[in-house]
Amino acid sequence: MVISRPPPALGGDQLRILILLVLLTSTAPISAATIRVSPDCGKPQQLNRIVGGEDSTDAQWPWIVSILKNGSHHCAGSLLTNRWVVTAAHCFKSNMDKPSLFSVLLGAWKLGSPGPRSQKVGIAWVLPHPRYSQKERTHADIALVRLEHSIQFSERILPICLPDSSVRLPPKTDCWIAGWGSIQDGVPLPHPQTLQKLKVPIIDSELCKSLYWRGAGQEAITEGMLCAGYLEGERDACLGDSGGPLMCQVDDHWLLTGIISWGEGCAERNRPGVYTSLLAHRSWVQRIVQGVQLRGHLADSGDTGSS
Image (cartoon, rainbow, N blue to C red; front, top):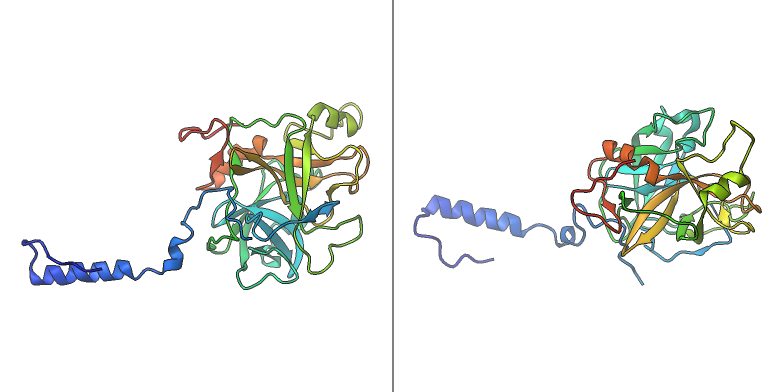
């Protein structure tokens, strides 16, 4: 960058300072401009516990992370910002106060060979929902994970959006789940452990309540849950997929509408997957996580949503 003619009011010292400032700003690395500090959420920049699923493509779901326990894949999660991940609270069980046991692997597609563009970062602390109970691990099964340091965004590492208050999920809405969990009950995902994906339709909440009915006063499906999957079974999330995303595309953004939480068995008939609803828990996440992005059909800059 060349300054051809300084303004007459600038003296020699002032000119030298101005030129120095221009040179400093012009030496910023080119790569830093490829991904903004806060990139648009829920929009993959494509490169060209799941039963009955199929291989995803590289960088198809750049917000999905692997939560490692003692170095091995344990659960999945979703990246919300460069410092926060959301997952299922039950993934930590009695280890909420032992973050050193866990780490987060971002930007991986094949766990068996994450590649040099993946990033691994420790966990600073875990914050479960205040209504989550160790005894009843299905209720408010959501936790926020604070990373030890900020991560760098790339085409393989991007945040997902949360749904704003305009979003509704009527029955039969097609959404997707993804994860590195077992491909059948007791059968782990084989090497190289390629991220699996599966399309799952939303199931009517009243129907799901009837399927999991346990008698008066023992309602298994609450307002804070979503059900999705197939009544005939055969396709479902499974062990190791917990904490991963239920993703629905609204307009041109992917929204995190649910978190893989629980079910009875894997892919069993009349036992669809049950997910922690982000429609119900969005406000809690917003109160904790600064910078989380919301999208929806009727989103506007002033709509922060409520639950």
